[in-house]
Length: 329
Image (cartoon, rainbow, N blue to C red):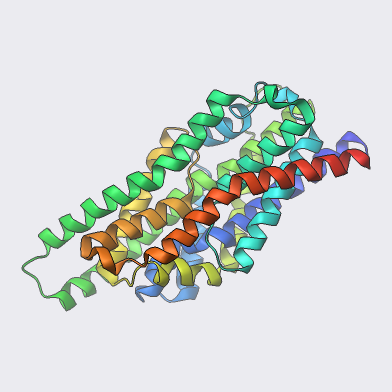
């Protein structure tokens, strides 16, 4: 297959990954405001799509991390490797969306890259320090979100201790519109950049650009793909994230959204890719613990953790198999 066609296929798959990421992770940004009825579903999805687009345009630091820190040299990654990595990540995202299980698109993409690179160039081609830094951020971010979610919720309880619960929830439902918008903005600022990094890496390896700088047309196309994907919505995952972990009221949703948006945007500023799914779930668990430890449905949380742990090994295996199949064509 000519190189131009391969590059075209990479760009298509990267945009498809962003589109799927949009509806797969829509739940993370809007599940709380839908479950607490702060916003109608159609309004919440529309707002999330717009804020995702704006967030995706603000920075490229995470894109450079994805494009340059997983392998020893970006030029070692050819189009076939990227196609295999993206295919593994897309297949895993579709599977977990189909069964309604929140999983990490970030884990899926990184696992796919690791698997495809390992069989194409060997384990020596992997930048172990870069991978450890990325995985460290992915692992620590939900733990931090759980702890800070507990602190934020406890602080709101203290702040509103002299007010009636119904009044607190009415006020919180209004502020939750703003917090959900911030959550969608932070989601776009981090998640859309992962496809930007892949597309930039493909263009660099193909000789179409000379440095690992994200072109404007790549930023616009990735932002648009995530925006369109977000408008489709991910209702199966909304039910799991929004209600099965912890039964929330508006004040809980406000605390979870604020905490998640700050955590994710901080990671974006540090150029670290994090899992929006992990951070939001961690925030909800922390908020639930502040209410009452037993109020959190820990059996659902355990199921989610198992899915998260499985993601990188599974997508690495799928990415490796797809690469070997493609080399036979």
